[in-house]
Length: 111
Length: 116
Image 1 (cartoon, one colour):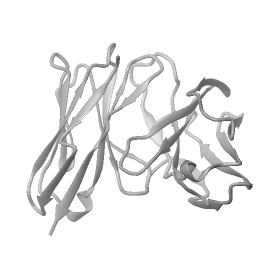
Image 2 (cartoon, chains in turn orange, red):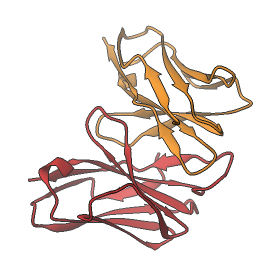
Image 3 (spheres, one colour):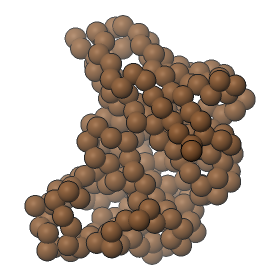
């Protein structure tokens, strides 16, 4: 069964610190993987997309990595800000009909 | 900024009411989706429309009735809902719902539904 797992389930960090979120998937075939940020009560917003041939991609303070061999992705947030408090969802497109969602990581950034 | 627009942003309805959620996109996408999201959970797929035809219905109760009037619009008609149907309803679109290497899903801001 195609699955996406994320860890940790929740994370609390202090403002200005860095953190890394993990996404492991068993989706096959694999087409692309996207990280979304979802503020409470709002729709998910795309942060970055990774395709099979890409290893690293940055978007400001967000850097995503992908290891297609081990089927793992990470999202690194640098110099966290209070506004980074949100849920981060990993979504994998299986090149067919399915967007497979991870359960999300809830990040809280404290002052 | 999202390019998928949902209205209304908030809706409170009684269990005997009939209401509709509306969604619009102008990206030329041919696949549109309805998702239901409860607090602290990922979105759950309800319906998929592909080229304006319903292609996936994830065993959703008939009190939810989707409609796709044209390639840019998607509605969700609500009737005789239950309090447990209260949730954030997300509309989304993607280029297609079939094989496409770069296919990506874009979400609207969501409609908060409360059933009283």
